[in-house]
Length: 461
Image 1 (tube, rainbow, N blue to C red):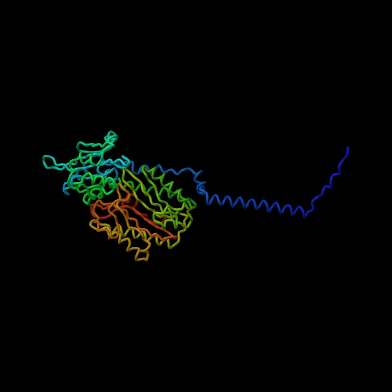
Image 2 (tube, rainbow, N blue to C red; image 1 turned 60 degrees about the vertical axis):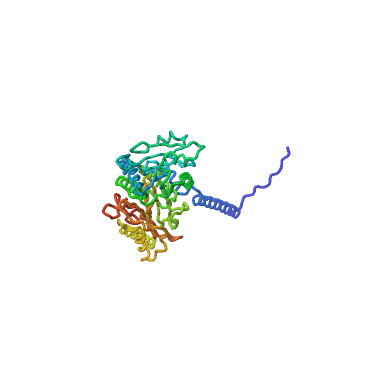
């Protein structure tokens, strides 16, 4: 058969081999660089950071030891609710008022164990109505009524509302005016003065004012608000423990925080620790470095650097009562700028000076001024941008408030947050917060005193 001559085999020269090898090496290096760039992009910008990947495989820290702190604390007993109702009825009588009305919420929870978690607020009003009633001996007693939607009346009667007498449940069908039903069922609402909780929704207030046209429907005065503002020994026991447990949770989480972690990861750990401590509805605002310069900022989920402070502002609940604790801390391996350390110490001094100023009989504005003057003396007054503090109890923020211009007077049993801060936008934010109560001897004591009270240093929260 015919054969076709093949072309001669060409042996590459050394120069051609070197050229080919050089091109292959360049191609391999280019591929490696592209892969590294892609990896860096995903690690820096994607939801899974280096720390997130670590967290995915690292075992969840064990916070179970925190459960012991408040295990012995009991909720408010029935007898205390009855006592509160009696005190409210007596106050209404002294004010020559006909009734007090509140929706499910903090005030209704205080007087009748009726919180918003027990009864969700909707367009259909359910109202707690407390009226003073005189017996044959001219003694004042609390008469409790619950205005309820008719189709919900059975559920309303299942609520655990303490009372020293019979509770009435006037109900309103869907086709009638609920406020007119209330006025018809509770004679005290027909005339006189009706005080309502300050958090009553506007459409409910409007409905009451129209239905009780012959009555004056007014926001509850300080005499009624003060019943809830000044805490009993039972309340203080709960408040102390929930605040102490929150501090212990912050310290436990700090032991598990490393450089490179994200804000969201610390928040996750804090929620886990607060839950392990037996606290409810707990959570923390977590801000690193310059993000903390916005006091209530949402953060950017940035990574913690070696020069950054960690700020955690935490609150949680125990038997309905709230904690509020803020710590700004460094890690053992942190290298914090000297100026930032001086600011931390200044904030710490402002907190201590405010606590010393908070005495029985002191006007709340003077306590705010004590912290503000501390900053002014060092040229930092303009960086303390919010009030010093707020009342705390069944709500994280409640009256009275530690602020300039306030004329409220501090009394024994009052509880407040003490939370000065310095906020320099783009650079640093530092806040320290502990809540205190006013002791019977007239002095202020941190609710966190049982676990050491205020932070002791940037590395010792």
